[in-house]
Length: 243
Image (cartoon, rainbow, N blue to C red; front, side):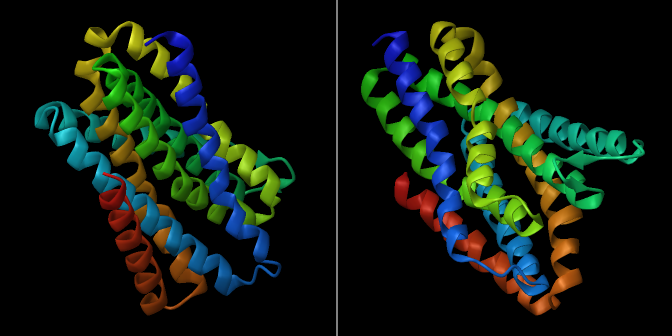
């Protein structure tokens, strides 16, 4: 096992995130109803991913996992406060609340990718077979995460191709952290549950304070809960299948 193999494997996991944008090619007319369902579905996907991260992190250490969740909540609260304190927030041609939402989701998912990258590197440090298994699992897992990102970006005016590009961008920390964790596995392994908890905490905050309230502005509570529930269950089932 060498650095080149780890780099290639972790780069593939990052690229797989862009695949999640493909279903959005078939949505031509983005109505408020589609926007609401997209927000709720993205919330469910992120909530399912968060539960998976918590379960995985608990295997490494509950205390460190709890610290990570707390840090994730603090991080996202400070990020939102910083954005609220700025007069103008823009994302290309998108401005205001939509731009803030996009920046928050990209920030949360990018932080999430740091933890996944460490997971890949640590796994390869334990052996080629385990590393290949974890890489495959994360690569497949990244596809619905890319869909979650695209469900936020595309209805707000970002093209599907750009949404795919931003999805991949959010996963770029994976190859970087995978190489570092592989080289210094004994140093990074204790921080893995903290990273997993941090990502989970940030995503859970995003789900209940941003995505679900936004969804309920455009669709009924019944539709919001149903969309979120179905996507969450699908994500959990998907994670169980690849594990």
